[in-house]
Image (cartoon, rainbow, N blue to C red; front, side, top):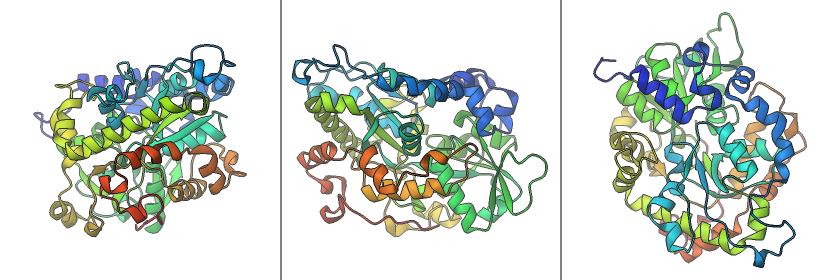
Length: 432
């Protein structure tokens, strides 16, 4: 990596401040270089305290006024969006910045940027924010481990993540004996990574310590902003994460995309729009207006990707604190010839984008995701999922009808170039 294109220490610190958790404002040397185990990550980022205390916050409703007050007498709240600055959050940010909330009669406050999932979760549990995006597997953890009445009300996007590696790594087998960073154990990134490792005869190791065998891969949790630098410094061999960090790795760290996750799990969701169940029940009309706004924002972004990158960039609204060029690459750069030659795209017939947007949460996806989470190695106790069936999780965790009504009013699935017959029901396509 040349001096001209390198990420400065000040830029790294600022990125950690923006995207990391409470502990990531000054992460340890180990976190910055080789990554952490789940236990260490929980302690350093503040999630350990969250897991211990947040169950008691489950009664928070995020509404002003008496809990017993009839819904029709409660004033609709302002839209208070909480987000991490990644492209997955673009629809919620555009809903505010491009006027979609306003068009649907919703007063929206300036979206609040959080530095980590722990801080965002605490704000969501307490009601300081009433609309947020979370990693889909994280919502499973929140509902069934922490006891929170979180509801997935829409997908925020599809695809938009990738496995990024050194130039010298040409296939998955080359990762044997190496180290790969993930952003969170309960993430689609960890799920897809372990699916791919298993397919290629590699075993994930957590807290490996000592030497890693040639048929093993050491997995560590690392703050996403540190991933490109850690890869450039050869402290890790690769990372799997949401955009724009893969685009940043390509441009700033002389890295390459080994595989786009959407080219493995076709049109999967990574982050989802969430609200509290009690808010949905008490404010059904307002909730529908929110869904109209999210659907409208997604449709606008799909048809105005470059304008969206400019709007959200540091030179625009600053809601995504990155140069327009990096956001634009994450939104648009999916060249089939370029990435087909390297193997990052192996299914051009799927006709995907690098990141795309479709709001409807397919039941088949939630069910398959829960099955896959149960087979994914994480450090810590995953026994809370033992008695949760995929069908139960889909029924209890996801509220689909409100966003379906909003999608229908917007013109239906075909508005998003999805055939009507497959707009609300599909079979999951996974090809490593």
